[in-house]
Length: 548
Image (cartoon, rainbow, N blue to C red; front, side, top):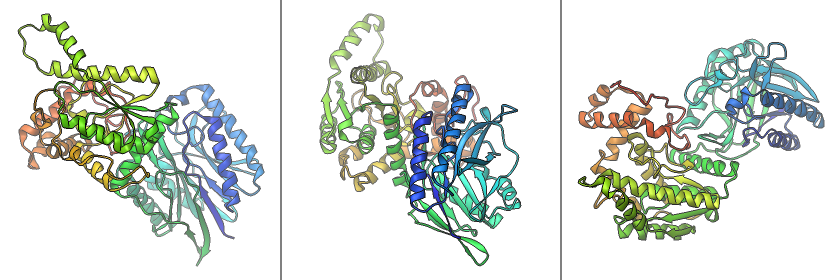
């Protein structure tokens, strides 16, 4: 007998139990109509991932339990369909909370598997909420014995081996694995190792969607027992792909549609677009506001926002100061016209002069410095937040990871806003993404959204005459390499210098990273797209004397 397995690669909303239940019911109906008789949801699909401290609220856990009961009863509508549901479950006697996968079929709860390996690193805090399970879970369905695993379990050999020892013929893995660049290939490589170790094929069901600072990229897949890819769903899209399971030469052979693995820059772009779309949509904002400067960062954020939301939900404001170059006005207008968004201009010169006049008696005898530069940024931030308050749109900040690392940004100025779109994108990657987007139109909003001059001009904050970023920072190819080594890879100062970087550059950049922690603590959240971002991945003290 052939078994067809459907994976519910869907975008769930954290805390929306009624909505998530209806989405799962709809998936059951569609899977059944396709001939599938086993439906796998992602990890914790019922509550959405990650529900964080909602799991500490008894009322929330109780509501999850009631939703499980509802879905159990609903499965009677599809005779012979087994639903493997990811959810949080409390043990009736001990009161302990588990990250579970329960098998629901014909109106009954057949069995539950409790996640054994609870990640507590990076963006994960599962040991804060759950206790680990201890036993494998293998259930029989349509003549096949299926072993369950949940996400992190599959990154360690023991849970898969225990399922195989318990008689599993196939591993079904429920996942909510946050995206970072290169993660899809990593997942497939790790699961291929599990397949080869156990001699069992694998079906990997993955979540898709944005949730605060994390993005889930879909790309559910199936592997043969030898680790080769048998099927793969598209990345960054909701799908209900079906995998066929047949017996051949004494083993199981899997088959299904095979989407291409997403290339690096396309994956980054798709992750940023999905993050913006879901942050704005799931939180009910009517649109977004962007301070458009005529520079590279705000141009990239604008292109992402239009791809995510459509031009009708994006509004831009150019706020020139006395130091804004004419070409910045021209390029900002040009880009706004290209992508079809609303564009307004508000000169900040009157406010700037008013602030300087008010402070003049107190600043008497002192030259202008970064104080006056920051005043300009803070005036712009105030104007954008006023528009946000009046019209309800969320402000997208435009600072990149290189700036966040070194503090080349202004508290209550260009850091003011609700979502930091490129907070985890180094400046060198900003330029790479801009060139990729000009040559590609993944969402049908048009080629070449970013004027070429914006990409080729030397970066400048334009807060003083003839200012260039390299006046204050090393060249970005040097800066980004040091940030990546020190911040993302935890390399020490001396090893970085030994790789050929100037000691003065390394000391300067690492010092800036440390002394600007207080700024990052007050920055808006933004999507995590690298292995380590300035968010839950990075938890360093503000007061810190350690050098290396």
